[in-house]
Image (spheres, helix red, strand yellow):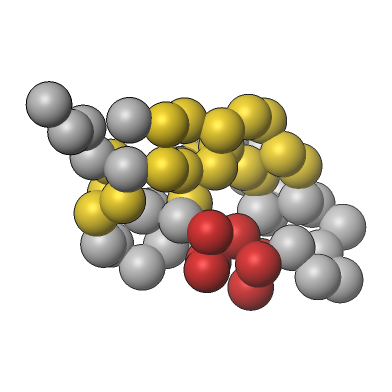
Length: 54
């Protein structure tokens, strides 16, 4: 049985997600790998909080 989560940045479903903070709201979101790589560079608010897998 495959499980999926929706990336909170691109709104697509993935079976591997990354728990991150990307802004000053300090709220954790789930992101796909592509969005993670886009949000990480030069972002002082970026924090990694773990990987969720199927």
